[in-house]
Length: 316
Length: 116
Image (tube, rainbow over all chains, first blue to last red; front, side):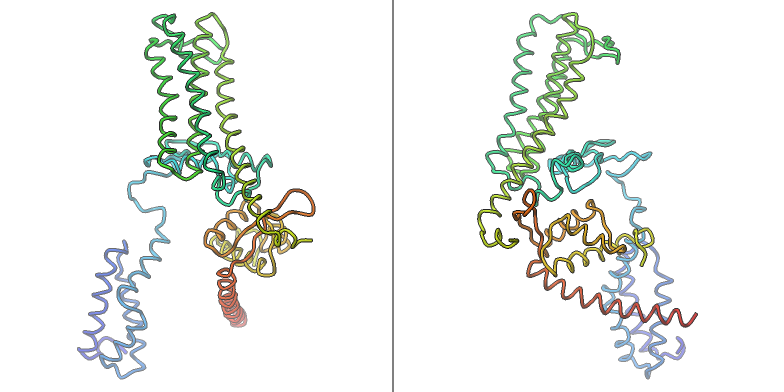
């Protein structure tokens, strides 16, 4: 059957259907649909060839295609699958010169799940904010066989609330140390203090003592304040423990730089204090995260192994 | 079907492996390492632990499987996975769909071959 064989009434039914289809598709499908509509027209004509070609037949054949909206949704699915990744919308996350970047407003959930995701084998994962990679301590713990990927159903979810809250005093203690040392040493500081060291251990940059202390205080206090907020807002245990671990890392680093500054002022040579600080800024949060994972796993085990003696005996 | 996944689109393979895990758990509970080992016995279905655990986590989140720790006769306790009631139902449906699909594909591929 061809277009010319159709009665005007039947053609009108089909035209109406495709007009509604185009209207439905315009919002969901980016590409033009002329070719697709032509194909569908010929499909409908072929199907009508087996009928009398009455308007009712057209309605029945068109019903096989679904409603115009359903058909448009079908095309939208296909086009979004093929266009995925090339859509030119402004992207806040992606890759630049092979480096991952993420410029979305950071969330405690994203920070925490980048630092601790034992299900992800990758040890370097895209940073939660900014450009480059960060360490997935969960993958390190799995690779070193300290934890198994499925030790916890949901990371830290079974850790008792008071222990989750108990992760915050760690960084607070480091911050108190930092503040105490800063306050005690402040009066004796010269106007300009060492603030940058070369790889050989020579001081190669100075700052006013006010600026230097302000910079270090921000480095130590802002992550801790954010962590406090995450705890106060009763976020998920993963978010809260992740925030504690992250602030512990920053506070440790700030404390190390402060001590290094005082050490250099006292005539000390070398950057071993900063290097030790860097090491501890990784080791301490790693230890905290592993400890929490252990506690979470043990809590799960106690729940499963003591509550149901039936389960316990099944394997024997 | 070729092993390794290179020749099979990854989404397709992921779906198949998911069904394979459900099928395996349908025969009885198993722990993570056991699932990896038992699937490894089938060249076309072999997966790494890095693939298995995220899949298990997803199946658990969607309520198709449950997990519980159990004492092990050797070594530390293990986390065993089993099908939930919803998982049994889903597996039955997927199993039927899979059989229909493989029958259809077999006859389609067979007729393709003979018509060459």
